[in-house]
Image (cartoon, rainbow, N blue to C red):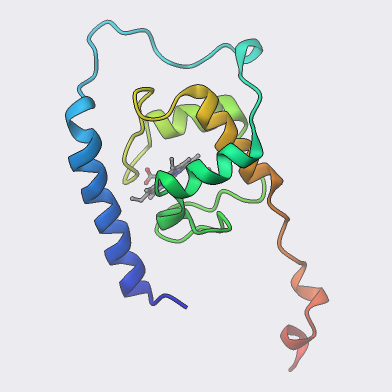
Length: 134
Ligand code: HEC
């Protein structure tokens, strides 16, 4: 079990890593078209590739290996629909570092999305005997 302090340092380390690795490529291109893909053109995700990318790009550090949330939002079960998911990764609302298309393509984000969708839902707590003890 990782302590929340260790998890926070990990999140900060990943953030710093991201800044050094990707920060220089982040300058928004003036006039660049918004990257929101048309719903019809959304790529189909590959679960195995998504699993690799989820770890390789550090999503797990803030969102947890089971995408259960932590420093980052809970993503599983029921992640936002793919088009929204892509928008939120490209332009996060607050503390999450943005991942541009130079870092992760729409195809790769579709892969990560498919991986999150493939995760089993957590068990209903009512089915866990230990949690029923009074
Ligand atoms: C440094 C921590 C961190 C990392 C790394 C990170 N996230 Fe996040 N993520 C967050 C936080 C915090 C939020 C909540 C919104 C915000 O603060 O920007 C969030 C929100 C999101 C959301 C929106 C969820 C919702 O329902 O609104 C998605 C989707 C998401 N992250 C996907 C990803 C993916 C995919 C990756 C890896 C490519 C990733 N995140 C990496 C911290 C992180």
